[in-house]
Image (cartoon, rainbow, N blue to C red; front, side, top):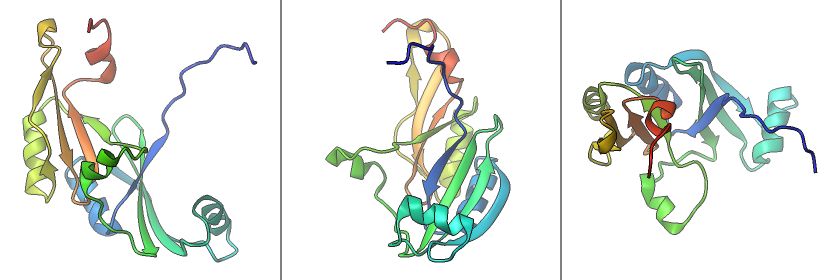
Length: 173
């Protein structure tokens, strides 16, 4: 066993599947303010390109073609949006597929001190609010709030009013 110190790694990016890449790029730009860095890029797993070989190694030859775009948040976390073309992506049913105990990424969380304003913006742009807006650790007096929404493809987006560190540091549960 290696006795070297384990240190926290930085998060580079999160990959999100969507049904229409162009519409998703527009939604994530206009609703959440993410920046488009690169793309859309068409990738085929059956060609001999480096991207095609890497993709085939990851998803297998069953996925013949997909599109990808690279975006970023204000704190430089990458968001990769994927639209599978062959076979075609399909919209999942939000949180419903987790009720079966399926593992996997559950949601992404963004920070906006105007939580009500962002919820309204999501709903005005074909997204959905999944839960009420809840105050977290009300006894702390920090005004920390959270809620859950969905993008138009049913991907779950949590909203915090403060950073993860601000909310969870020194809390007693």
